Amino acid sequence: MKKTLFICGANIARSQMAEGYYNYLAGKNLAISAGVEADKYFEKFNGHPIPEAIEVMKEDGVNISKQLVKQFQKEMINKVDRVVVLCSEKTCPQELLEGAKEIVYAHVSDPYLQPIEKVREARNEIRELVKKLLKD
Image (cartoon, rainbow, N blue to C red; front, side, top):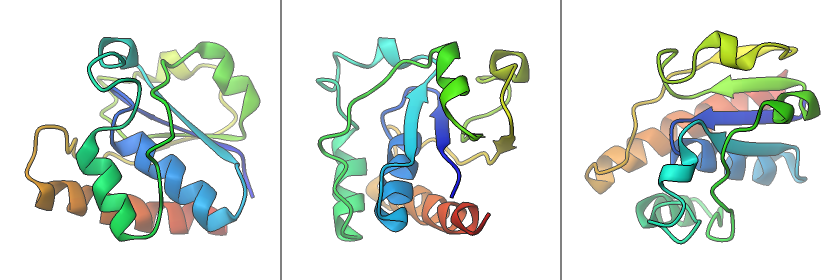
């Protein structure tokens, strides 16, 4: 199994859910997550994912409530085998990821400030993506 870094804009929902699923389904901590603009959101949510993301993950038996919001740092790339970008290439341009061994762009709509049904849709999409990634 590949060590994987999941990136999104703020690291408060999508990449946090992906990290949670990956580590839960792998049975060990092989994934980390980060946001390219996470510093803007850290205090707003006391350093944790948004409550809606925590809630929908609990529905699937995955607890992400203890995960912390992390700002993307270039050196994170050197610690993983693969980088999965869940936001648009505009938010996370490829030059930001220079040196990555493998980059996967898998845009998932941002569930932040969306109704809980949209958060569930994002969760379901991320769960299926993670299952595919774990087969690689």
